Length: 130
Image (cartoon, rainbow, N blue to C red; front, side, top):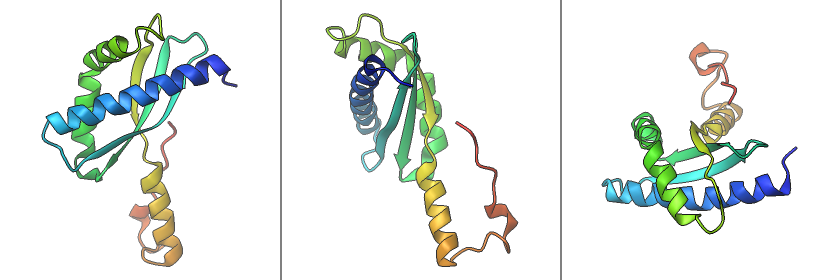
């Protein structure tokens, strides 16, 4: 169960991280790419924040996630600058890809009969636990 404090800090982090990532994408020449932070969950001791990211279009998702993870110290520093009046200590940021939209899309395709997972066993990839 998340406390009010955890929720508040998660909200602050979510707002600022999405802004930081969107600006980095534009500066990096990825103008048509939409990066959104779908969820942030903060541990009870406020030391770690799990940041779930959704990227659209998802053609270069892997590459973007590698870039985001490798720039984690820079993102944390930028976040610390923005939140210095709100947070004493910025939690360690862990980035995860939120593939729930793709998962929902695959379910909808299956329901509409566009792709039958029974005929094509490759569509039944194991759902990863986050």
